[in-house]
Length: 285
Image (cartoon, rainbow, N blue to C red; front, side, top):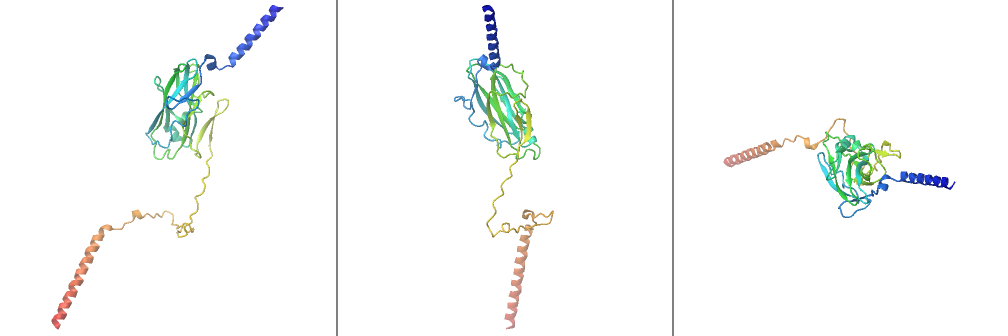
């Protein structure tokens, strides 16, 4: 009887241990630590100080920006680094197709990905093995490709990168898998009040695309200068198609010299006639 109780107790203990191990994340079980980040390779923290790039407005078609992010494994075991682009929002589809992100390490050149492909996330680099306590520099590149005409003019976008360390075999997860672990870094600061198509991640990992509302701008303060017609509500109106552009007026400046010449000629003639009349009057006397 006691032997049976011992066997039952052993089986129950094994079952509980199995459940505990099954509920423990693989990274924790293997000693893979959390990610710490740094912008200078000296001071590390779970959160990144600010955004990687100061402003996306500095980019013109054909321009690019490059910064280095330092990633450290704080655990006791090696882990595979996985970087995903996420929290992407943009106000113009052409702009999103032309704006690309690349993340690379010294041993792994990441793929160049357009931000429009993050649905809701998109892997930019994976497979780099980071040893316990090791620091790996990650080069982040932001490039704006060519745009036709006025495409993307005045557009805005915001992007984040998530850094994750785990023992998951590289390539076993879909490229659009987001995950909930790791540290998220704003790649570019978000622009408040911009119209944006954004991709959100729900609890089951399904992306929902929606349009952010555009705030109605406040009207400009009314002019208080009563000396102007605009302030008095007397703005002139013109027929449709009428264009008033002083820069295009034909002033015939080339004839100014001719006018001066004619004026000099007339003046000389008047002087000659006056002189002749004076001599004639003198002769009559």
